Amino acid sequence: MPETTTISTDRVYVYVILRYTPNLVRNEWVNIGVLLFDPASGERRLRLIEEQEEFARVRRLHPAADEGLLRGLRDDLEDRLRDGRHTAENGDWQKLLAKWEDTLSNALQLAPQKGVYAEDLDAELERLYADHVAPQRAPSRVGAAGTRAFVRNYCAQVWKLANLWGRLEKAVPVREFTFPGDPMRIDYGYRRNGTRGFVQTLSVSRAPADCKLFAYTAARMSARAPFATEFAAVTDVPLVAGNERHVFVRETLRDAGIEPVPMEGFAVWVAKLRPMLQ
Image (cartoon, rainbow, N blue to C red; front, side, top):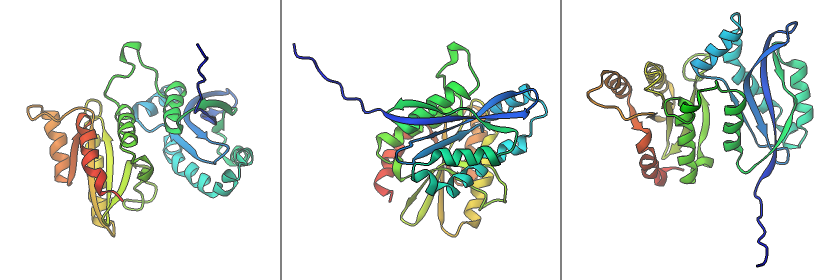
């Protein structure tokens, strides 16, 4: 039989692990983020710790950790990436990262760059983050539902299957609608017929009180935004009427005008939204 040739669609990406090193003398660090980029196109992805359990892990390893610095790091690095966009698009990532090394806080360091073959930039970012940054879990719980990261990964796949991934805003900062320095970001944003929509993932199983933060933020955005807004919250479990915790989450969201969407129904919700998106 003639041999079959498999054509690989993998591309070469480069990634850098971000480390928090509060005591340079002891040289003890904890990984807090991943920067992944395509050196050919300049396209990049950045993900940093954001969950409470992730910050708790840093505090366990470094009790005197500067949490304010860590929570503000995402905005700082995004600003630096925007300022260095021209350099990155011209393929000079080495120059950009060298500038970071010279100007970042001493407590923040970049691990040596490494190359990786992968087909999808977003999927590879999630894999690298799980391998290098996310708190390790017992084998029996790997892939278990319950975390925002799990719900967000599922949502990303649904958006992509619907061919909407490229039309979305990701990690939308809310500080222009709330207060300067607000570190919160909404997972996804979209536009339709003059309205801006925002979708946030919530873990009802692990952090039901997070719904209050999203409700407050949605109310501020609705009141301050110079455009029409709509909000949805994708929950890790369906909200059951007989469960007091679920009722609390559902009513908190609905009072703020937020549509609760269970993860198991998100694909149908996206299918209905798709024809309306710009």
